[in-house]
Image 1 (cartoon, rainbow, N blue to C red):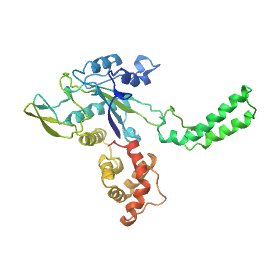
Image 2: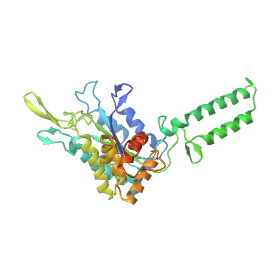
Image 3: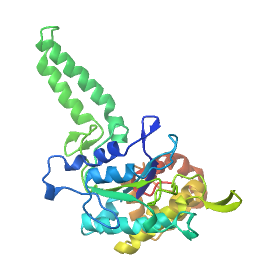
Image 4: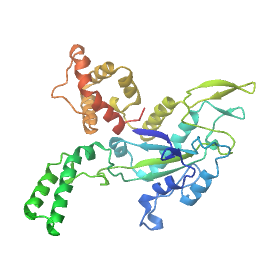
Length: 343
């Protein structure tokens, strides 16, 4: 599972309104009948319109400075393995979102009127999407780019020949284009992967828009706080502050596993990703000590997420050390971003 929490910006500045972001989240509804559309939902309802979401988020920004984000985006992207465990993508992901937001509020080290932050204190709306498209910075698109550039050059030559601006053999150029299309390293259903192409397989994910201010529009609740859990003196009183992302990510994972009885593999766990960052040699050592079946699944998951695998994995600690780490670290970084909770 991959989770991100980001303040929404328009260029280099924080968005003054949620309209642009909400409009982006409406893209899958274009051309659909009302009964086919995916609606925004929260803890208390299932069918909020885009206009209502914009009005409520934009109307909850009292006393925020221009340099402060008005709202945050939480994107939750379950892996293919996690999605395959879910029976009803729409209803089950809604159930999970509502449980996840309980984990969200419990990760604040804040008090409102002398009590911990509660679910009713936050204002959020969420939406399920079922499609993903390849972006320009995706590895497959980037590595196909030299082929795309050459194909474009050849197509320009064909147009010039057709306009009589140059001489050449159109049929020969078309054959070269066809060959380049097939030689591009990344294909999907027999076609070269390009930016904007929809990704195959289960792609359901959750977008959550959550207001920076609490539901009363009085208190600031920032998941972007650089403080995990601390206290600061303000006006002679000790005030709690901070948001613990580690706690949120760990609980998000546990909540998913509990909700859907999901048996999480070692390489999917938040703990293992943290271990990789803190001590990569211990990460690989623990990976090699897994039971045979679990280890096979672990390597399959990593391989599918884009991790380059060497012909033979060393089996003892002496061989393990830097030999494996130096070769695979970049690949595991990719695996972390594509298949697990972000850190």
